[in-house]
Structures are given as structure tokens and as C-alpha cells.
Length: 513
Image (cartoon, rainbow, N blue to C red; front, side):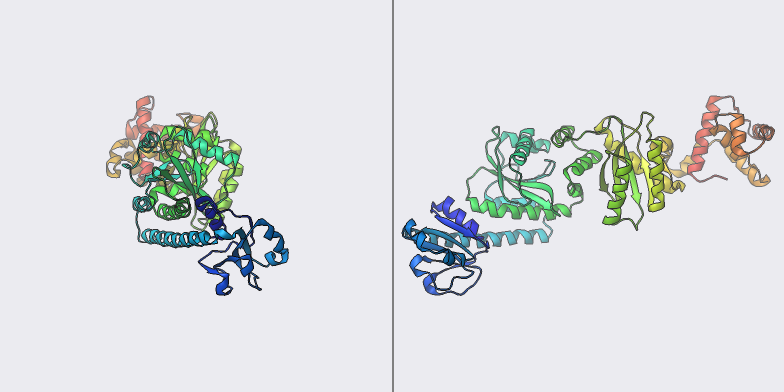
């Protein structure tokens, strides 16, 4: 136990007045020894005795010194006191009480350390979060709750042990009340917390019990909180020293749990993760309000897949920064080895031409795929937007599409085809297309390509001849030949539609000549 903690507990739990302190090195105290027993010069030893029993050599010691009255302070020269590594002055008649108190502190501290070690053993054996929290509840005699940095409830030691109506409702809906979130943010503003797991108290006037909280960190980044609802009063030192260990164990469990991988980002990244994977609308709106995040009026989900050589932290971070520069204001996170961006889109459902141009240049830097969803105006639609973007990678692989920024709106028909049995797909292809393929193979012709281009150019003769780089008379001859071979009616909208999706089906099935 730290010397500073010992002094704090002497005052708070045993009402022992500390007259003067100086802490140069806040050593861990493992044992206590009286001045009269001699000096071993061990850093984990706390020496206790009266002013009259002071040894001649005190350099580097940690000590509690008893004096008869405050007048004796003047007899303790600065030189004598400065030789101590750390010291505290108390009244001489409190030395026995101090000895008894410190013995109890150290015994309890060692017991807490053992129980913390037991908790880590449970974690290393693969225990789930519920098991860890139940073990902690047994030790602390109070319900334990774990939430992520966005105030979503991840697990509870026991539902039955919670009778606070506010927290019962919180657990049922899966996230903390707005009042609790607001109190935490108010505490951050009034007195910013250090980046550690020291226990702090959150007071909500609507809730029955004190909430004693400890932050959970991963790589110096806040990922969540461990909360103890104090139904039964326990010693301060117990929860202050044990609760952070619960947080460490919980964090280890969450790291290996696939469902909770998304919490190991910033609060904004956690929110984006919840949006694209689906979360309660009420929870999302509370998080938005607390994080003051504003999304574009028209937005889309861009998925960027780096190649295997870029798939490391430094290279991915550099790529992320490049795209954030191209798409200012976009929100980003890494998910399933993809970079996911929520970005602003134009009224036509596209990015700006300049943005597209800069993104396409990234294919020369190791990007293998980029796909963007249809535009949406509601943040709760981002889950579907992400699903659309991910589906585009399968289409690009199937159809061998490279170095193209794929828009879902341009490939949604192929996404629909991907859900059907491939063997059944060809029944939906227009029979005229097989005749044209067979003719072209037998005569080394280009009637199949001619009809496809004619339909793509919306039956416009001039555009079609220009696209095929042939004379208009040659095009007229080919169209006439196509009509003779197939008997199709190019004046019929239904026929044109069936031919159009027929070409797409064969293109998807790679039946192209």
C-alpha cells in the first residue's frame, strides 16, 4: 500500500491527526518496524517511533514520527527531516493506535492483492464477463455494471440484485440514463479526471444509491467504466483498490469478445461502430447530444479496402489521414480490416468530381477496392448503407472490377443477382442473346457487342456508331442482321428492358463473348 494511502486512511477511518507531511518517494509499504528495533534500510518498510527514538542515520527512510506537542516541530531541524525519503508527524499518544491501524491496512491490502490476482487467474482461464462481475460482486457485496465509453451497458453482475428503478430501466433498455451521462460529463468539465482508474463518485438525485466508478483504459484510451451501486456500505479502501482491478479484467475479456471489438476506439468511433452495426435509436441520439456530433444532411458510407501490405497500423493510419484530407468532415473507423467513412454526398448521390479524382489516385498506393452506398438523410439508415458498401466488394471480385469507385446505385442490380442461385440465373437471360453469341462465334462477328452498346446508348444511332467506332451505315446493317436472326422488337420498351437485364445477367455470370 502506498504511503500516501496509509496517511489518508489514518485520517478518514481512524481519525488520527497528521500534523505535517512530506512525501518525496511514495513507496509501497509491505511491513512496519519500530525505530527501537533498528534500521534495515529497506524501501518497503515504514518506520514508526517517537522524536526521542530517532536514529542517527535516517537517509532514504519512510517514517511516522511521534511528538509530544507542536513545539517539538521546531526542534526537528530541516536537515534532519530532509534526510527522510518521506515522513509524517503525529502526536506521540497516537503511535499505538497508528500501529494497530497500519497493521490492518497492510493485511487488507495484501488480501485485496490476492483477490485481484484470483480475478486475473479467472480472466486468463477464459472466464466470460458475467463470471468476472459475479466474482467482483461477491467480494464487494454490491452489484457491478460495466458500460462502454458511449454509456451502453455491456453486462451486469446480477439483474436480481438491482432494485433501483432508474438502473433497472437502464439495464432493460441497454444504456445509461441521460441524467447519469450528464453528471459524468459535468464532472469532467468541473474537474478533469486523470488518465487512470482512480475511483470517483457520480451522484444522481433521481437514483437511490451512490455510483462508484472506475475508468477502463486500453492503450491510454478510455473504453468504458466499471460501476458499483453501493447498496451496502463497505470500507472505502476496499472499493478504491479493488474496483480498478475489476476494470482491468473486464477489459481483457472484452478484447477477446468479437461482439465488443467496436468499443476499443474513441467515443466518436464507438458511436460510428454502433450506427453501422445497429443500435437503439434512443441511445444513439443521447450519444450524439453528449458528443455534439453533427452529420451531413446527405451522407453515404464509403468502404475502402487496403491490400495486405497496407494492412498494418502505420500504413492504414497514413491512408486514413489522406482520405480524411480528401473528404473533410468525414467520420472514420477501422472495421473488419476495412476503413469505413461516413461522408457528405451531393444532391445527385455522388461525391464531388474532384473528390472522386483524388480517391481514384489511391489505387496506385495499395488500395484494392472502394465502394460507396446510396445516399441517406437519416443516421439510423447508416446500418443499411454500410451493408450496401460491403456488398460491392463481392461484386467487384466476381466481375473483376478494378480501380473504380463503385457506387451502389450503379451496381444494385448485380447485388440483387448475387442473392440468387447462379444456375437458375440464366433462365432470366433473353434467348436472343444466345443466338447472337453462337452466330458471333461461328462467323467471328460482333453482333452481341453491337446490340449491347445500342441498348447502353439508349437506342441512339449516332452515339452507338461513335462508341463502336464504325460508320452509321455499318451500324444499320448490323442492326438489320440482328433483327433477322432474333426477331426482337427494338421499338418495344418491354423488349428493351428484358434485353438490358439479360445482358446484366450474362455479364454477372461471365457469359460474355
